Length: 175
Image (cartoon, rainbow, N blue to C red; front, top):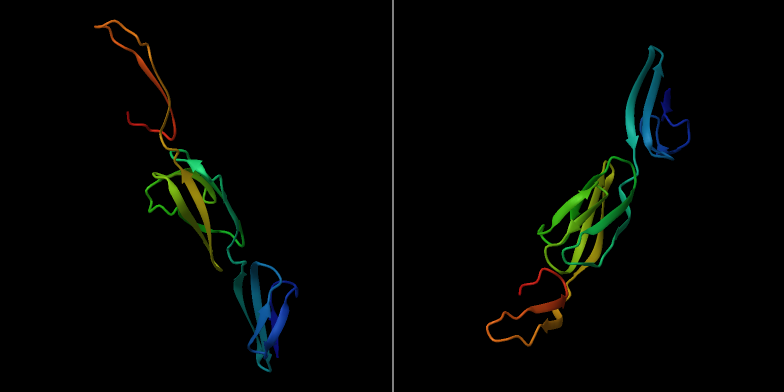
């Protein structure tokens, strides 16, 4: 005689199998104690095993405040479902040339060292699996534009002339 207890109060479903083997489908993630009791004319023996049922890591969403101008930090926020704990691996698509700033594993800021379009890849792993999400982002760079150039002309010969330039575009500028 065999007796199985799956530790979930019978919420799951016993699948195909015999008395000494089979499969069981749990209804919810969690940690369960499975108990097997066998009896014969000479006695009874019971064995237990703790099992974990988890939801695989699932990246539900990844957002950024793209586009940003070169030199500004870009904010990233990930929404992840599944059974914790998660391990996060970020690839910002620029070969690591930028700077990762403050934030947690699922949120933070990154400053790109160059302008262009990049593909950010987030990989999240838990005990049940790995999920990957890609997000294209853009770092813009406005070309240098001399908006105005004025002087205090005319001046007398031998006096210094003052020049003032008004420029627009992405800094830094080289004059």
